[in-house]
Image (cartoon, rainbow, N blue to C red):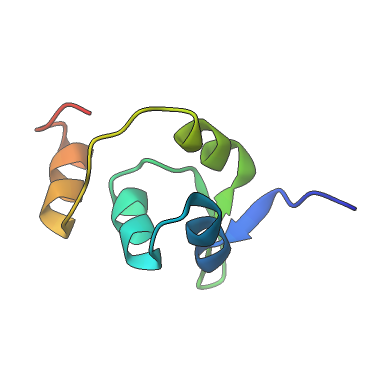
Length: 75
């Protein structure tokens, strides 16, 4: 079986055991490498593996993701 290099948002969220909305906040906070094909957002396998093997604090809202992206909060 061939392993995928890119996962849809739904597949990536399922693989990590989080909601698609939570994944969207993390993507907005630049926690994942993504690729776009048209309007579809795809998450790289390498960034999923790196995220899964690291420790994280909880991002619970869009404003928290924006704070992380701007450097206002340390991860």
